Length: 110
Image: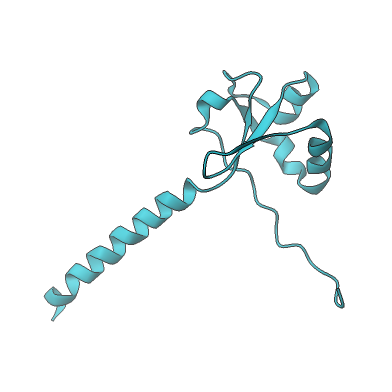
């Protein structure tokens, strides 16, 4: 009986491994587009102070260049992003995923 279930167990382990690899590739990444050779030597906030430009690259490869106003708002909403290591666009695969915000509490009645 165990031998008949073995192929299903192997398939389940294989599919779980594929899902874990695929899900890690689906997160948005924050990358520097004005200094593409950055490889984690500096933080995002230090690069912004020098005037570097950043973009968010999504899981489909779409790129959105961020304005100063967007970064000011990001600092207020998710300040941990500013302390991330900065990576240039040519090191996209090495760049860390953007940290997700915890689920925001919504007051009752809204």
